[in-house]
Length: 334
Image (cartoon, rainbow, N blue to C red; front, side):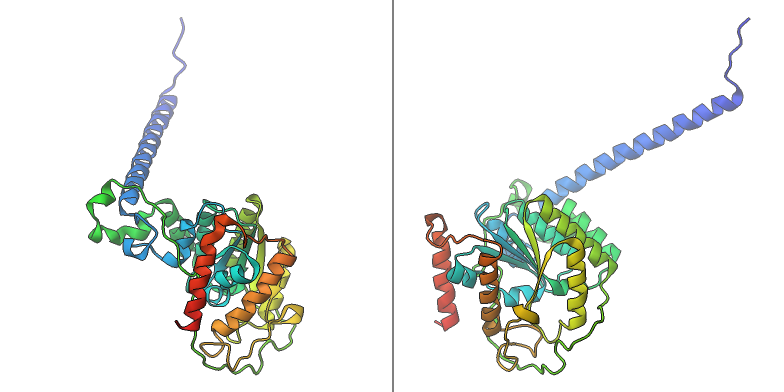
């Protein structure tokens, strides 16, 4: 006579396994439904164009999405040092280079990475310039997680827009038709002299860099490699934000990652800034006079070292000539 080999203990084990499987299945279904709801709500609250009037955060930086596809050869990322120091329209006027500055005040690397990925969805730049001051700005892991959630589900970034929703928000898909008149640059005409004593004094010290910043820089470098673009670290002149210890740390890390590093504060690539006239706030940022010097030097390097092409005589880029003419008038104060 055959007997059932299933013991009471085995039966209980099977019941528990079935119960756990049921719970796991419910969690998966709940997760799928939740993600679907977040995606649907995100589409509704997400700005319907990349302009401040539509609720876009950092519209100047996101203006790159309004540029014609694959028309930008140099992408600049970083904090306010980037958008005060590098003028895309001057690069165009002097070198015929198309560029855009995706700089934001106080930018930290999770946002840098986000802006890079966003720009790469429409552009395939030959060079990505990362201004290095943001490498030394600390941030918490929670900010990095929050940025990742905002990128995946914009409702986490734009949840307050529900107060201003309109009927078209329910039916229209987001667009990106706007671009910044100065291609992300900000003109600073004020002059407040800096005290350069001690600026870039020699030292062998290495400035501490937040571990998370180093990890994000490695991720940014990998993204650039995967997209066939050249990442170049650039330190713009600043008596407040830059010193030799930071230079040493950045140079060491650039060597480890196999990426180029240009420091306009020292050595053969130093830009001769007059700290009595070329800063708008005592050496923290450059004004337009300092920015013109940095931009000229950068343009020469981009053409000679990285073979970034000139589009100056190409009909497809005629709008850059118009933008440059308006820029020149703005500088002249007319």
